[in-house]
Image (cartoon, rainbow, N blue to C red):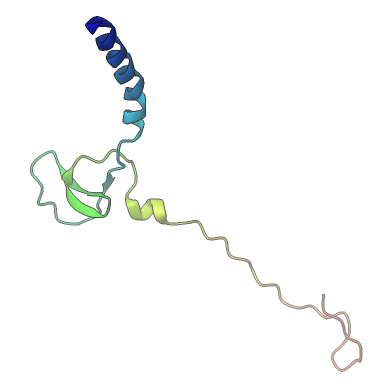
Length: 91
C-alpha cells in the first residue's frame, strides 16, 4: 500500500513540474550607468523591485512596455476651383 501511494505521489509531482517551470518570473535587466552588484551580477527588476541578479529576458522592462506608435500624416487640402468661386469643393 505504501509503494502505491509513493508511486502516485511521484507521478503527481512529475506532472506538476512543467507547470511550475512555465511560471518562472520574468527578470528584466535594469538600465543604469553604475553597477554596485557583485561580480557576475547586474541590476535587475523583479515585480518592480530592483536588486542584483542575472536577467532571463533579452530586453529591459521599459523596452517591453513601449508600444509602436503609428502617426497619421496630414494631407493638405487641394481645391478644384479658383479662390473666390462659389461651390468650391475640397479634395
